[in-house]
Length: 110
Length: 112
Image: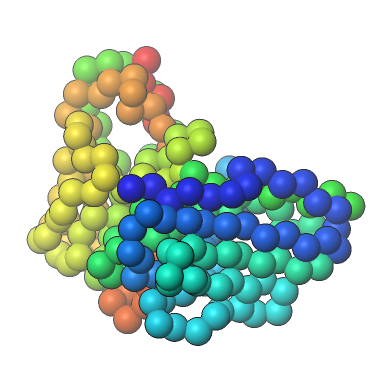
């Protein structure tokens, strides 16, 4: 079953923070985050595994709440380059076969 | 390394025609995937392969067939194209020691 992402779209000014949520009704083994710019292929951001630690680098980080089967992606002090559509992909029995959410479109304005 | 490449980039088919999409990777990856992407639907897995000679069904396999005769290539076939198969098709691959999926540039297919 497809995970649900929220919000569907968000518009920010450069320097503001954003949180994108991903929720599943099934017990998850892994949550993956990808970013896709218009007309391009998705690009891997990070993965969170069951029992693993919160991931992140610089201003983009993510958490995984195993009890709620939810993951959140945090973008702090957003930059223009952060614009794009963010997808979460959830793995049930392993981390290779994923079911992706419908995406969250993030627009960063100057 | 060219990474993951897809052929062709664009294609227009008439209903009932057949075609094959080619995905090639030069990174010696074990896992390969075919997705379709439709507006508002995200990426949906069609078929995938965990190694040469093996394939498995994903979420939306109906109307598609695949083959992985060589480790570096993963072919997606449409035997009788339908307008509902109009979409952007992405191929991806993953090395066995990693979970990161490397995506190809996509193929935009229109079925009229």
